[in-house]
Image 1 (cartoon, rainbow, N blue to C red):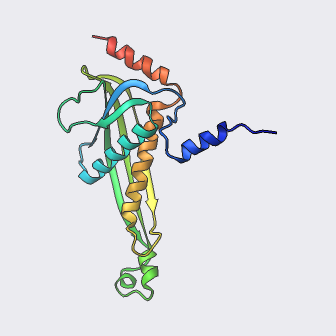
Image 2 (cartoon, rainbow, N blue to C red):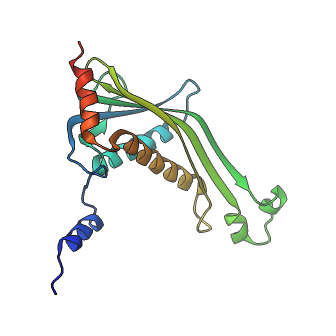
Image 3 (cartoon, helix red, strand yellow):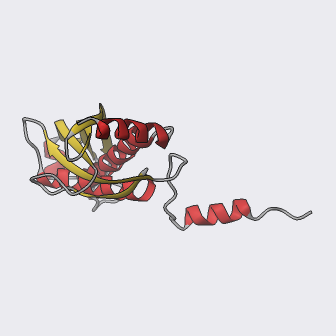
Length: 196
């Protein structure tokens, strides 16, 4: 009995990192610009840069838009859509399992290096707008969080928590924008673009 090669070919494409949209359809015919910023309390420029890069990479590889790029800091980009991502209530902390005295004079250097956990959490608000009018297509919000312990004595747990949080942010944004049917989002976009 001969087996079909289709599952093997599909598995090979997925393992090779082929850009297969996760939402199950063709990409929408729109160019999307992504801009990440902070709410009124401000925040780290490196966090917003990391989040923007993660969003562009994830939406480019697995999203539902034809093209995804970073929006300029000021002014409107030359795309049909703008995704504004606002981060707020940022909480970044490191917790230590040892006392200060044990950290200053550790009995076991490896245990001291591994005895901490970094945590990063923030509120995310999304606003998808049609350009050039700036009319609202969709908006939503959610919370993102990650916690990381070092896996090796030299690893920076804070960098790991930041990487995990930005990847989680990118997955949640893609899920929010490209969930279910791409045709529904396309209808929402076209309805807003027709309004003068």
